[in-house]
Length: 101
Image 1 (cartoon, rainbow, N blue to C red):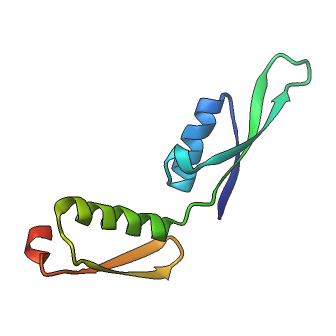
Image 2 (tube, helix red, strand yellow):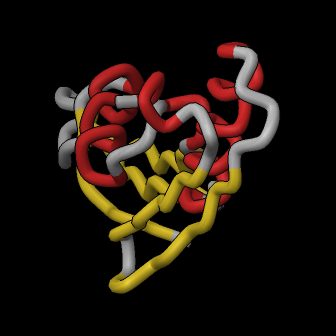
């Protein structure tokens, strides 16, 4: 799970900032928002904790498998590696390699 904390003026800005920080689409982001006001209540800002539970390695695998199925490539072997956190390699072996290139 990836998590980040920051301040934003609006919920929309919070989603934009979370997308950039977590590097995933907003559909995979969960926001915990704490509304804060200035001492005299004139200005409002949001204390935001954004987190995601999406398994990026599996998500990438699913996207590739769906792509090959839509292309009509039946027998594609997809191997995954994760050499470092948040770095993924996909090794694709199929008889249709020239089509993929």
